[in-house]
Length: 141
View 1: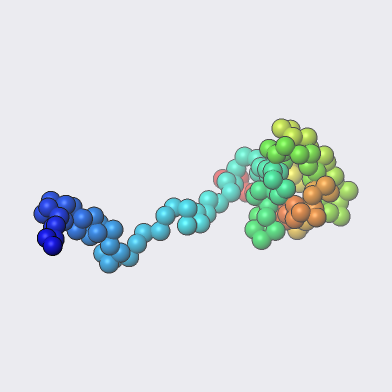
View 2: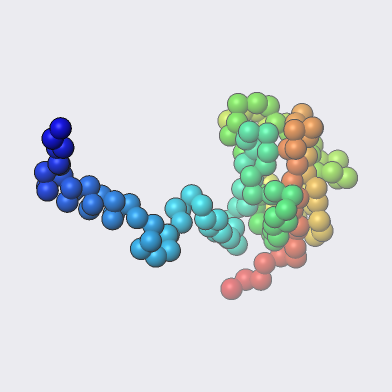
C-alpha cells in the first residue's frame, strides 16, 4: 500500500499557522474588556446620576463619590421603568419617568455636607441603592 504525503507548501503553511498560534512567544496582552479603566468624575459641571436597569450609575454603594455642595446635580432615568430617587432620612423622594430627569442647580441647597444613602422605592429589593458624600464647596481656581 502506498502512503500519500502532503505537498511541501501545505506543510509549510500548517507550520506557519501553528507558530502564529503558539502561546510560547511571551506574555499575552489582556483584552481591553478584561481591564478596569477608571475615569474619575469631572470636578466641574453637573454631577450626573443615571437610573437604568434597576441600579444607579455613578453612586454605587462601594464608590462613595464625593460631590462638592456647590455643584449642579442631575438624575436621569435612561431606563424603561419608572424610578425613584429617595435620599434616606431627608424627606427627599422624587419619581422620575422613563426618559426624564430632575436637576438641582446646587446640591447644597437640598442636602448639607455629609454622607447619604439613596434608594429607588420601587426597586430597592433588586439592589437599586447608592451612596454619595457631599463635601464643602469647591474652591475657585
